[in-house]
Amino acid sequence: MLKVGIIGASGYTGVELARILSTHPEVELTVATSRQYAGKPLSEVFPNLRKRVDLVCENLGPEELVDRADFFFAAVPHKTAMDIIPGLLEAGKKVVDLSADYRIRDVAVYEEWYQPHSSAELIAEAVYGLPELYRDQVKDARLTANPGCYPTSIILGLAPLLREGLIDPAADH
Image 1 (cartoon, rainbow, N blue to C red):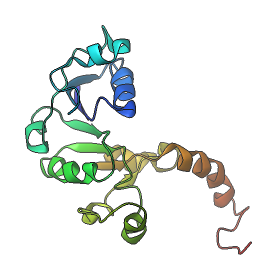
Image 2: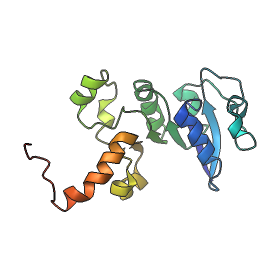
Image 3: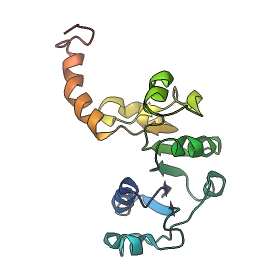
């Protein structure tokens, strides 16, 4: 049984993760964090989780999380993720980051669109979590950068065309 924690469980993606993972036969949700709803059962805040998720939201820092799960989803805003994830990785945990903090390989591009990156050394290690293209790398990754919905819709449509040489990404149009 894989012990999983959701950091930022009260946001849209955190709640959806809790709902989906609660039905997985090999996953045990062991911790759900939320600053806003600390002390409240997640199923009280989100009634669709009643009889599915029996966790009380907690406001915990990375050092308090490490013993609570083996695998974490960071469903927190950009910048917040990069403050949490390095400590979890140092503790030997696996993490899927749902923010953009580790998606963009070029640190200068990330910093142009977001803010200075405080753990840029981890970007090279992060695997872009699109299993249709990177299944083997995702399986073994310590850090998976979950792709966003818009890039995924474009990438999956263009990947076969690029692979077959039917479009030239360097062409000037």
